[in-house]
Length: 262
Image 1 (cartoon, rainbow, N blue to C red):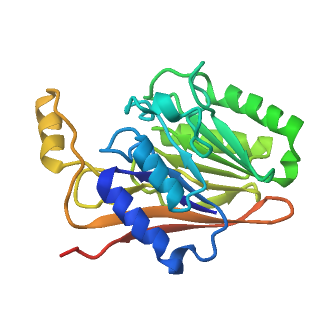
Image 2 (spheres, rainbow, N blue to C red; image 1 turned 90 degrees about the vertical axis):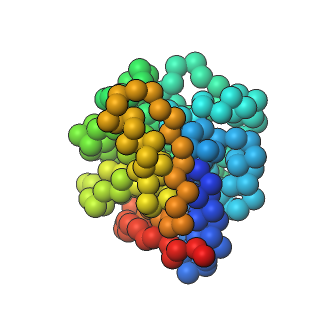
């Protein structure tokens, strides 16, 4: 399984398209997930970009707190077969998890520390796992959680709890900074605190430096624009699972910066 961290704007979409076309990185991957909540102009996901990702062969799109920023999402989220939003949003459109081929469950969850108020991710995960156990052979399937959260401690604690419930992978997103703590928790569950992001490598977590500087030094509202420098980065990870049990066997980080485009 290949998981790509938060795609940020046009630079992120372009470098991801190039990355997926390079079979050196994707030839051994059976399932591809990307976090797409920042894919359209840095905030949200338009249907046009959603459809492009499907055309590129991406199997599932996860998201986070910015999924609602492009208002046309409300017109297509219920029809999408690949997009999921955090399942601990109370009474929101769309779905918070999907099962593919009766073998792969992908769950999206939002943290609560320094984040918008949502339902408890721990209790929500209890309910999701109970539903999966009722409807599928949960113990022998691959179960993956994109935990979109700010605080490292919350991510680690959530991953340990998820592993105790039988989840096979928990990968963090949201900070746009790749962590270097990939490991297998309890011998069964792949973990990485944050996958990082895909987009311009010269800005501030994908955004324009000058606008970021103005906002941080004046404390006045300033628009965040996607950085358009010529260098882009890919932050991702590849997880290998046992085919019979779904247990995570190996996790590897991917982190590289593209050559300058002329």
